[in-house]
Length: 301
Image 1: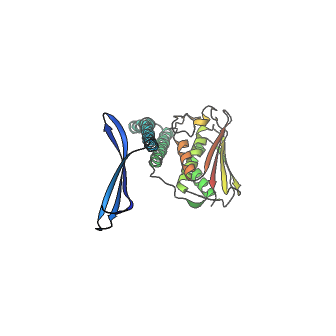
Image 2: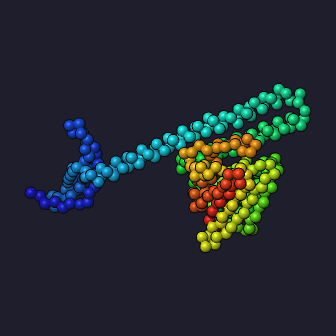
Image 3: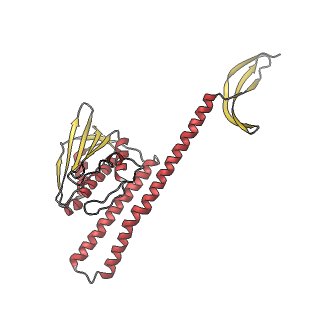
C-alpha cells in the first residue's frame, strides 16, 4: 500500500441527477494528492448528496433570478406602452398641424399662421422632452446610465432651466420667485440634476393657472452636509390618494394640466431615480386645490 499526502481541493461542482424519475442534488469534490514513495500526483473524487441548506440556497437564487427577469419584463412592457401611446399622440398632432399649414398657409391671416407655427414648435419641444425622458429612463433601468458627480453651482443650474422654459412661463403669465443663496455648490451629476429641475419646474408650469406663482428656494443643512431645494406652486394640487404612487414605476398616473397639457407620467419616476442615484432624497407635499411643494435634498460639495 502506498502512503499519500492530501493537498487542497482542486474543484467543487454541484449537479442535479434524476433517479427513478426523482431529481436529487449531488456535490462532486476533487482533491489532488502526492504518492510519497513514487512521487506521482493522484486525484480523488468524492460524491455526496447536497444537504437541505445548499438546496434551499440554490432554489432561493433561482427564485430571485426569476423575479428579476419578471420585473425587467414588466418594465419593458411599460416602456413599449409609453412609446405606443404617449409618443404616438404628439407626433400625430405634429403631422396634422403641418398638413394644415401646408395646405392653407396662403389663405389664413398672418397672426393665425404664427400661432399655428408656435403650436407646432411647442408640440415638437414636448415630444422631444418625452423622448429624452424615455431614453434616459431606459438607460437607467438597464444600468447603462451611471452618475458622474461633479461640483457645480446650484443657482446657475436653476437659471439655465428657467431660461429653457421661459416661453412656457411667459405664455401662462406665471410669476417665478427665485430665492437661492449665492455660491451654493452641490456635488452630483449635473445632467441628471438638470433633468430633475426641468421635469419639476415643467410640472409646476403645467398645473399652475394663468397668472399663477412658482417659487424656488433653498435651505442649507451644514450638520448633514446637504442643501434642500423647494419648488412650490399655487396650482391645482394633487389628490391625496395619488401622492404615495407618484414615484412608483408600476403606477400609470398622468393628468392634464390647466390648459389640457398632456404628460406620460414618467418624469417624476425619473426624478426619483436620478436623485436617489446621487445620494439625495425627493419628497412631495400637496393639498388638492392649493398647490404642491417638491423638496429635493442634494449633497454639498
